[in-house]
Image 1 (cartoon, one colour):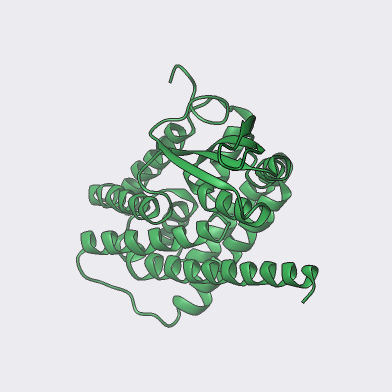
Image 2: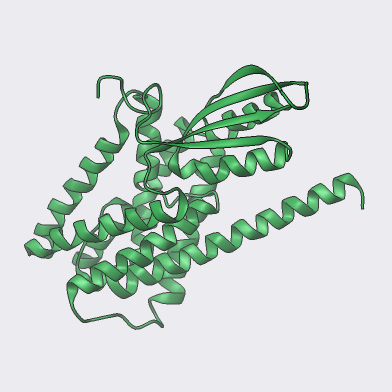
Length: 293
């Protein structure tokens, strides 16, 4: 087998793996939303939260509403963010919406028991689904797009606090839309469970990661970090004590959801690279937190 054929086979295998993760995540996301979240009458933030409130008023399909809520955000992202990010996000949003409306909602029964249990189990399933979608290299849109847009325009703004504020406003609005205080309280519990599930599956409980990469191919890795993650890196000269050869050391601060993609970049570019990842409770500087926040 030629080197080109082998490389093509590896790429095809990775694409199939990512597609299976995306499909699994979309199914879990749809099951959690349809079977539990919608019957609990909660709106745990993001585009799906807005769609659930509109569904409560109009009865329109949740998946279709989620897609329509994401469309203007995708339009803005097309002009201000990378086209690759928009295409992958649009594909994930479209697939999850189709699965929810066409394959799950018409055939899968809903849970009609205790609202608290419904919100909790819904949070678990939706969190699992979103984690698998993230592992596939895609996002579910909504807050992810808003966060990237804000980060692009205001790199020193504490994005986490802004998104938390947006979700908080949606929870308050849900109290009036659903007509009871429990909707906001149960929605907060569901949102918390979602975030914990995602954290536990993908990257633990930390705010970010600091990657130290010892490699002989620093330019290729840093170029992919810039193009695929829209991050940068610092390249330092190094010297291997055992090999007695010159090497380079890349320092790169990344967000939690980018950790899986970074591993793929290093593995496919330089399989012989040595990678050390340290957990960081806070990352300050451009693209992360302001020094004074």
